[in-house]
Amino acid sequence: MAGRFLHRCLSNPDEARAAIELPEFDPFLLEKARVISGRFPFAEAEYRNSRREEPGAPELEIPHFERVFRIAAAIASVPDVQKAPDYDELLILTAWHSVRPQVEGFLGSYPKALLCPLSHTAPPTALASLSAREQSIFERRAPAYLRYLLCDKFGLRTCADIENADLRHLFRSTGFRLVRSSAVAEVAFPVLLGERIRPYGLGS
View 1 (cartoon, one colour):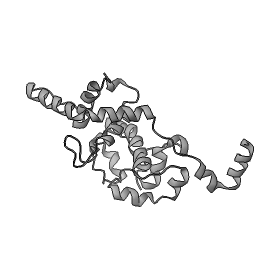
View 2 (cartoon, rainbow, N blue to C red; view 1 turned 180 degrees about the horizontal axis):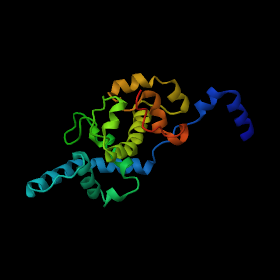
View 3 (cartoon, rainbow, N blue to C red; view 1 turned 180 degrees about the vertical axis):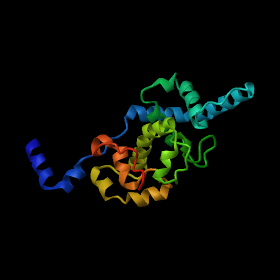
View 4 (cartoon, rainbow, N blue to C red; view 1 turned 30 degrees about the horizontal axis):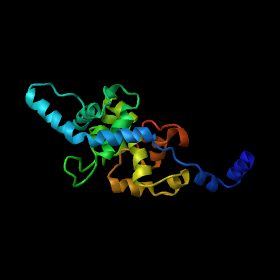
């Protein structure tokens, strides 16, 4: 049976690409992100109270959402979340779950500062202006951000879906230009579609 499938793939590449499903996020990780996002109103209140109690406390070099995320994770019984090996992926997924327009206590748009301090409408060449630390954060978090966009927001499920989609149009509609549309799939699915492109299509 495996031989027949391989032969069919070799003789019909389109059928093969349609049969290769894009990897999904781990269900447990998605559930953790959902639970943590549900604790955000309480975490936000706790964060604001702590700021009032310690007005002279130094600001951490992390985005506001990420500070509140750590508090929300602790409330959701995920202590020391910043030490978890899947921290970046969980942070990005929690941010997606927290985008709920017109719902009090939740974000109305994605907290884009989690990826980098640049505008998401900036061209890929702008990434070269980031510090080494900022570039490292972007490289770790951009794949999860793009995977969620491709699979959950755009509804792409297979390699054929990726190949046939007008990624330039889709990403233009989201206002995201930091990664070339032709490089998006390789960044989101480096194992499935090839080596990760570094530095994400700069110069095009």
